[in-house]
Image 1 (cartoon, one colour):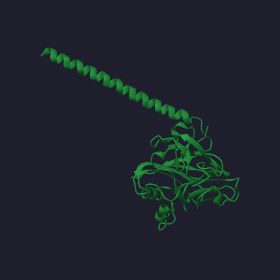
Image 2: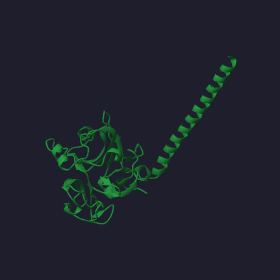
Image 3: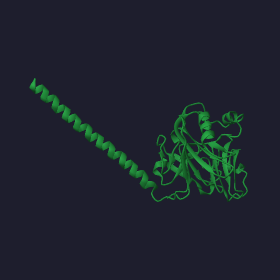
Image 4: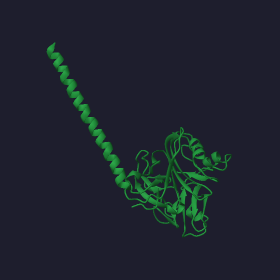
Length: 265
């Protein structure tokens, strides 16, 4: 009996030691991850304002000036990129299937090239356009960069997605269906771009699972400003954000394109 008790005590001691070692390893890994994130963003200009909403669908929001937006190629999970910002449009493999153009140059190849960011592939879709010469935002439903209406082809950027129609309750669902919003009724991670009539732009990501309608309602409740309009971006595991205040990794998949805030390395 004495031997059995001693054996049990020995196992308790060994088990306790093993659990303590595992706990220490996990804490070290978490600290290393946190340090790596701060190292990636260390020294970047903080040219945005961060906010987050409360409620069932929590929005993480970065407010920026349109002049500070840089549409750029990513090719990896955003967490690995030394830039603030969020994911961009839809893609398949290495091909970008949403418009992503700066000053008539697509971010992922040559003008007119498939997968370059010159086209909203297959469908005319809502594309958020900053016309730098006119100093104005718009959402234009187009198929390609050649269809965009801008004042100066050398002073604009255009990001493709799906129209939110925040000013038209009676139109948004039909428009989203016509533009083939993926998984509209399923609860997924979501992201988007929204502007207001003052010229402020909001980069939005939620890590709350929600339908497109729930995400849109959360946007209407949480994003300030008058005359708001915007687009849905790619969602699900592609919904990613880099900010000092929060890093949202989605499912850590590589994304083809990023909506970055100026000052990236």
